[in-house]
Image (cartoon, rainbow, N blue to C red; front, side):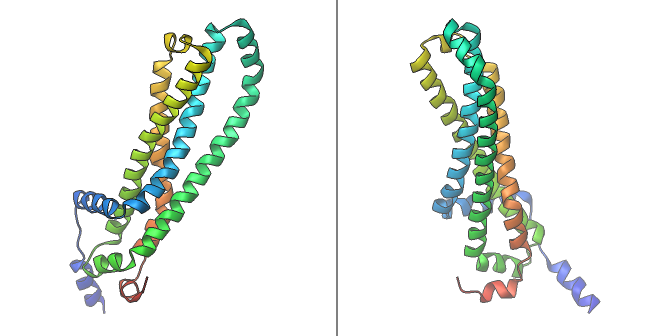
Length: 215
């Protein structure tokens, strides 16, 4: 029995990371509709996060260089607004993670036979995990970049309409760039976190059971 197990282990295929990346990209293209659902949840969450970051940065500009009456209003309300924003951010990011987990679990269900076939051909559990983590990472990266762009543009335009060219004159480029990187990293991190459980489920799948399953 021990010898048999050793033989099975030796026959398992250790594919390079580059191959996992290639398969992940192909899978995202094939399941574009499903991928866009996951990506959309990331876009909405990160655009909201970046909109708040941008709004806070521009409010500081208005407090420093804006009209006196506007400064008073912003200074009085900024603490209360920040508390509300914190809760909204936490809630939106939590919904985003739940959406990713749900979507990835549906992908696992749809790909029972594909995963079973790969494992029958000798793919390691690690390789299956890598596939799902990579797919989620690509979606997170793309969704976060789009979300950052939408968040910055929308809030900048609103402030430009309401407060004029003062916003452009003192635009906080360094802060916006810093918050953009933070938002992108947050989106990718949430995507990876959301993919861990579905990836574990896929990796622990019994090949024979997966091949017998009718979806």
